[in-house]
Image (tube, rainbow, N blue to C red; front, top):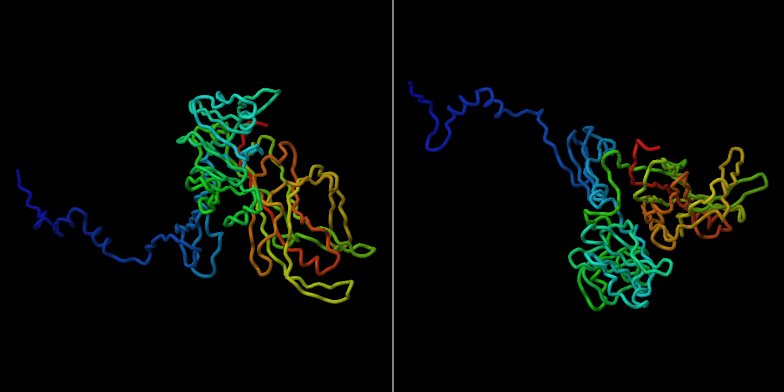
Length: 444
């Protein structure tokens, strides 16, 4: 047999001759050749500025985008990018599609809701009526079958009633957690506090009525620095054994339905007040934002949130009373959200070659209390060209299961008597409602 004398190693280094023989001379040349056609993908941490290329990525605090259209020069365009990861949607799935704000928190004698996570019934040792009354509205999750219950009084009987509730309110490690409805004097780490008092709003950083805060440590004396705002309630991890009964698999499909208001000005409409011309003169009245929601018959809602986008208006007007012109910045004020109970009970006013207006019977306007997480909402941008977004509470329980739902955003102020005040209290806005849920195409 012949001996292979191919040079393989020189003092433990692969020789160039052996490498060339194994890999091939063409591959060696290609590896050492520079080409202007080779492009490396980039990842941007801020809004990309051209040039950017297909395959580049762009990461924000909540989303990851992928470039689908290269742009060598000019300005950034969102149409060049698609979302490949959405933190809120992904986290919603990992939390069994349930939300902290959806928990029914009843007012109680001790201003707190207790939650229990254990195998045995926690009410077995509650002997007196006073003690049982103090636990009405509390929640219990059985640690064996993971079913969840609420403590109720029905027909004179105290009992645990099985309910579907997000399991993030339970603490599996300590078996007990408190949800406070009033500023607590003492608390445990992980306890939750829903802020319901205007004095507490002023006490805490970036707080609004209805916000949730979480205790970062145990304390026997209230200290505001012990509490951090739950800026995204989905950030609380849920128990995988949720009793929600929602299964996004098999025939059920996860869906995100979106409904938006319409407007003549780049999708925006006046929000506040307006002056309408009639054959007998002018009429001052409200100018609202209206959103129509029409759910498919076989759609099951998980959550529904309205996002209001507001921008100020620089007004130039003619005051009929003083017969003088004026200019000022205007913005919407003291906004509230209403549900129309009878959509057919309205009047539509038209004037030829003029704007239209409509009026609903006030008795058909049902206020969604604290919809914007406060008694009313006034946008913070009161001049300039900025756009401010404000999200509502979960509106799931306010949507009609059958038929359409009409929502109205309106100022709670009285209609001003003069043109200057009308313009000062009127901005421009649009609204988008995002509804997360699931649908079974085989039903209906």
